[in-house]
Image 1 (cartoon, rainbow, N blue to C red):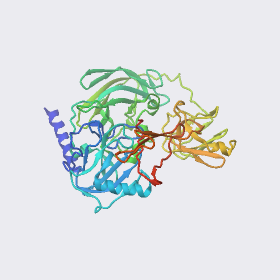
Image 2: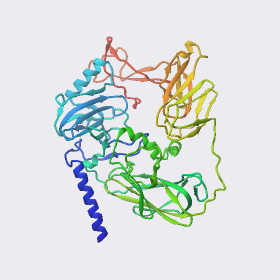
Image 3: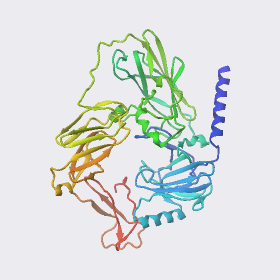
Image 4: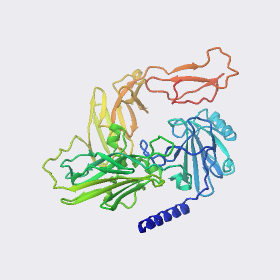
Length: 526
């Protein structure tokens, strides 16, 4: 009974603190349907944390999107990727709500946006800013229709709540929005790492996947391991909401060693500038190889995440000979549904006779310095602190391909890749561009800047690059109508544009030489 009272007291104080920090019932659901989520706040995405909630729209577009509270539209942005068509509403209580992937704005907003697009003769508007008198809105007012614009993977509404001053994003569930969730997170895999040169796990210096057993609901057990030196863990863990099969992210991850907390991380709030450190939170090398995200229970040296709390030795565990340890990893969702793994660890005498030879190359990166290397006709230049730690790179030219290590090391900044093209004629240069060919069948165009004798690009990805030639013109195909067909009764005019090689850079549509607005949907192949 005493434990129950203590737990209830802690939970009560937590809820009271949250209600004081974040207003409850101020923001309403931005749709006229119950909330079902396809994406949770803070879940692990590619190179970033998810900054909002992805609310399902019944697999269709055109649902009414409502202002979550009174305020004014302070910003609108229309872009091909990202949030697509998006609205930002500033509220008098110090918060801003964001609505993304919209298909259409409310009439008065749509009229203004279209006028800007025609003035610029461009579908993308950039950021359009407004004061509180131009587009005031009331709570529940229709501001747009839901859609699938931008970089979405299907129709849904992306919804955010931000601190208006700091622009930090905050988990919208803290504001009282309710999503039915009685399902505990699911641990799928567990890994352990030898973190120092003298560390050993089962007498080996490498990472392991440790088999898991689901012994009862929310309770997992791992095989016993022996270890010495400093070790760390990571988990592949997902969460699900009721009435949804989507694999979502967890709210918090915690680790105890012999009952004492040494690691804690949650996704209550974060800034966009720190989101890139997700690549240090996950096992980045494993993700790049196998497309699975393992979240570490220790902090890497270069990480600047504010989501860590009260770490001991950065979550790294020092194992001593002849001592036994019980490591427990605990995952929770926002509603407090909990799953945990217990891992028995026995301290063993280290076998340091067998050591791995360091992979030393001629291209050593000193992370704090500017680093520049040249091989044949290719130069790579890395600004200071592009890498999070010192490392040796593999770098060579093989049959015209610049092989710059492998794309398994996360970078903090972009580096410059330059090809000397002085051996090409002016006619040949006209059709040349730089491409990433990590997947040779699907080369990816890199934005290529051209000077007289050199072409260069900037990128945050290591890997294979080469010069490619594109002499094929883009193609245009009429859809659902023919040349000379009368179109005055048609609601839409659709064409398919495509390109093999460097892809579509821009497009322009006119009628009688007058520019007309056409939306390029890069996700649909008709």
